[in-house]
Length: 65
Image (cartoon, helix red, strand yellow):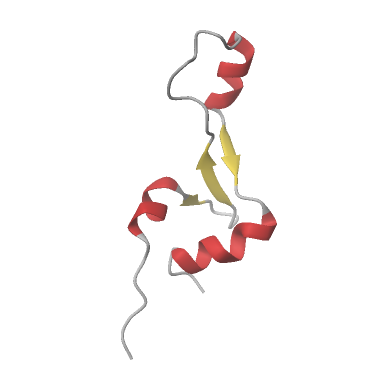
């Protein structure tokens, strides 16, 4: 049987934490930032997490389990 290949684009965007959560960066932080408030931009700097419903599909793309 051939080996399962990791999806490299997902691998660059998502990290697995020690507790097993999938950490990701938030969207809407690339351009058109002048119209957004400081608070909103500051909150976009924080990491987001993948929702539990999508977790299994992301793990499959990452070659885990």
